[in-house]
Length: 179
Image (cartoon, rainbow, N blue to C red; front, side, top):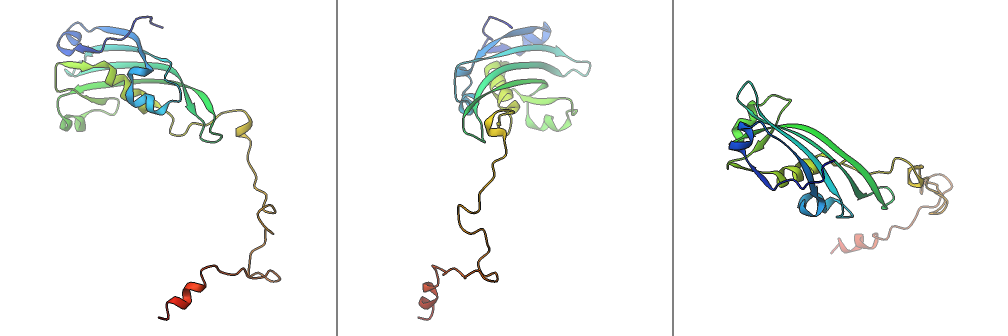
């Protein structure tokens, strides 16, 4: 894991010509959208980026991301640690219409300027690799919760044979319709 911070941006004219590789980290605090999903803003995303112009003339960014982040378990509402990792191949495009013609192995990255904003790129890719629902894989909240029907009543259906019909609290509203 790299001990140097990732630069904020790179000049795409230079980095693709040199077929460069960059690795570094980004603090969670610098990733606005990802930080909204986390319970703790302390942490880092470790990033490896490879820049190349492929045989078709496309500017491809090979992205590899890794992080450990604290989120809320949606089952028990307690903090939990999740491992986040993603590998994606991005193609730099100048307008959205170019995204339609990309092969399935590539994702588009819209960049209308000569600068590629690496922090924004990492932020977006980390949000995309977040689990849809965060749940503990083991522990007390994993066991199935059962509901005791006797605690909330008889557990019998009103109106069934031998079960008295409950009074409807809105029955009084029927009288108001007559006027």
